[in-house]
Image (cartoon, rainbow, N blue to C red):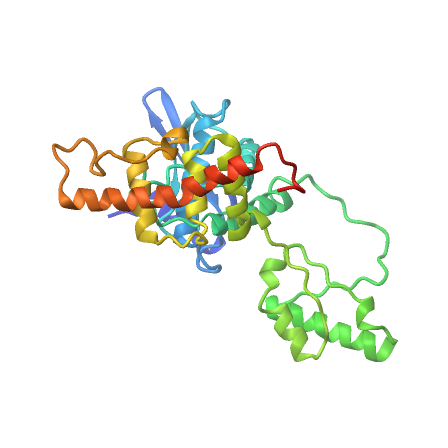
Length: 340
């Protein structure tokens, strides 16, 4: 059998970016498949499966809701090799025309507080998601697009640079070794102090576990300023969820976000049963503040002993969260931040 077109491309030359994979004709119409490549095949670690799953959900939702593009989208889905996604659109467009759409899609992941459709009634494997890692990959690709894709032509500088050294490193380890040697030379030969020297890199995440180890090897004291998104920290998510629940009317998504911080002393099994229940009965808002009485199996003919046990579990979860929050809401009514 002949290789299909996408397998006939030389994958040793593929780099991250936006490319046309193929154009198919359907009578007088055409559809175009685009290769949205995040990783270099066989040269970079692939995308984590759970993060890939979350990116699929978030970006598919973004594309299907974009007012200018939603009617043009045929398909968005992951590559089996976990190095990127396929986007199928109606008509024919140059990859350049998709730049703003893709940049906006991947930047939207940063604002996501949860993965849309990550529930048992909406997803075939709803527990296999990782929003934190999805944000990491999305930030990385968005930064790559802004830095490398469709850049305007730049003219070389005619001024001879001073105090600038260009070093062609074989890999990340070699690059960090070169930096450490330069720092040592500045301190020993030029009389500089370690506190006079800064190392600036575009994305410190790529250097973690390499640069710090090499600096320690050369006995160079250092402080590494690492950016962390505070909104994905469990304690912050817990506090944000609490205040959203009591100020915005006990939305189902906020209830689940609070439970899934891991700081509520409620087991994963209980959370899963509770989540199934509220989706089966479409419960949100004030209905989460009232006792659960319906059958966990939905419109079943009768309550079995197991149904009663399952209902008790769901009601126990509801009471342990909703009742203290209702009491807290009454307690802080009319108070300012300092008084709270």
